[in-house]
Length: 81
Image: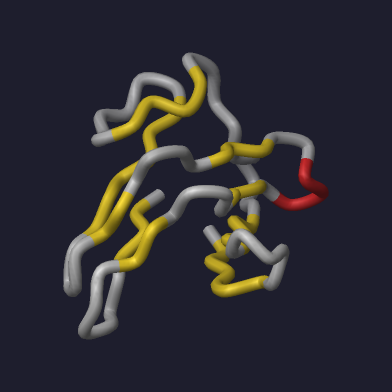
């Protein structure tokens, strides 16, 4: 899963969280700032990425949805996969 800052200013992801459908798995960001136009890839299972979330797979094989929430708990983005 890749999170991208499409804005013109850096964004601190401290306190933000990424969940799967049903919130069975939750990743909490800490000390991560995305520069304007920057991105970070959160990896699960054997996938490569900038941040390792879990060593096992998080996403369902038959499709899942990722939800990104900001530090205030507001839904910022979703991605179906």
